[in-house]
Length: 257
Ligand SMILES: O=C(O)CCC(=O)C(=O)O
Image 1 (tube, rainbow, N blue to C red):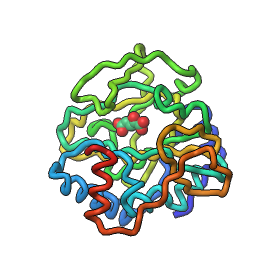
Image 2 (image 1 turned 180 degrees about the vertical axis):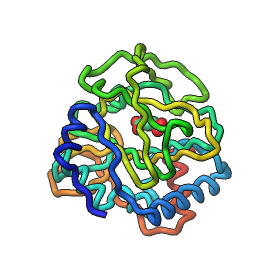
Image 3 (image 1 turned 30 degrees about the horizontal axis):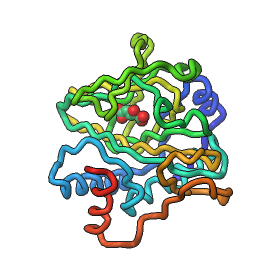
């Protein structure tokens, strides 16, 4: 599936700080990615694992996801032809689960507001109001960096518990997606999500795309398109062609999962 943004979608991204829905993966691809994710959770001995960091650095299936041609074509329309992955994160909410994501801006700790960047939130299940879809405050990216407080809460999927102090929830919009669709959002967009009050899982695979203009963020970046000079960055290699068990052990050590 090859995708590019229409000018209307591009304007939506600039104006609202987010554009959706964008179809990027087929039902077959979604089913393949979801099974691979679920078997990783099963290997951890925790079928209801909710956070998965950095899968693209260790597992071929996750590498295939972040390097999908249609996905990169769409991202290229926003960032240009030199694209790197600064990180991946899966937030998985099992049915009837209290986990939520507090209102926040991604830029608060990442520095993604200092470099061209975008986050792709890819639905591996339906994602809607009842199962705790992402919610956003359209246009909030134009406010620049906002003050956050760090409030620890076991149910918050954000490890630091960062939250924006004041949010006008009446302005919130649900980012409703079908499996295989994605949204793209800007790093200063205020967003979060509610618990899963439904009988259906909600899984989002999030990819942080940046460019070669990134400053060294202190973690390895994976080049996925272009040939720009990246000598100022620490570059990761695609996952080694290794057996699943070795990849799994390396990922666990990296992610602490
Ligand atoms: O998956 C969610 O509920 C929130 C996602 C999020 O915070 C992000 O993509 O930065």
